[in-house]
Length: 195
Image (cartoon, rainbow, N blue to C red; front, side, top):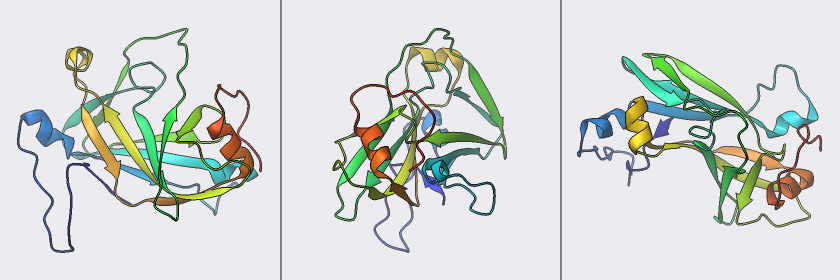
């Protein structure tokens, strides 16, 4: 499961992706890749692991910086796009929250490095828009998305900017309790759901 820039579109198997042309920073966008993976079925398992995902970032050349996800600069950099069997699209995003400690901390990745972020979609820290049909489970094809907007702070801290999306979707089952947590209006504290 690889990742490509949303600007790269393919209309057939033999079509080359479009090249980005406007600036040096545009060229660097294609050097960052991401993947979305489910839990390893051969390892430790719990009922909540069905909702546990790994969001991986890979860097291919000499180095790059991204914001860490514990601060407001990087907190919402990861999001997801899901599609149901009828092709309806859903956006998954981190719920807005207050930060008691906040600084634009970054993490550097060198050539060949990768960063794994654990994501628990059903722990109350994520929401979906539009809402999923309530009272029933859902199975979606989910793609990961990583986005850092260009702006004064990004330039000041020398972080990568752009948007990339995982190329191969991952089929994800969301239980009724998970759907309820994702549809909830307010933040839901607690451990990952067990249904």
